[in-house]
Image (cartoon, rainbow, N blue to C red; front, side, top):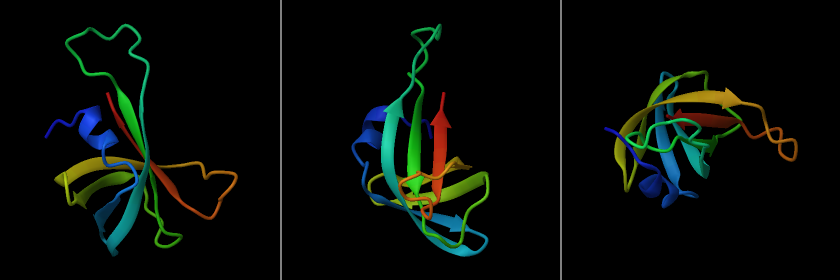
Length: 99
């Protein structure tokens, strides 16, 4: 399933359930940001990234996860752990990038 920015931006602040080897993990989509197009031809979508917050435990590694969302259904996205927010270093953060 190809996803575009608009439906994702509409669900910022909502919860996703990630299915992991350790069971389900609740993530919150805290940001959706469009990226610079650079020299990308108009035929391609504008790149964007998603930032999720997760619980302190378990911490997820870089992998492709099945994520469930009430409005989007089930999606499979690669999540990558990113540096913690200096204001809240105990909260794990994960990013998904769509080019």
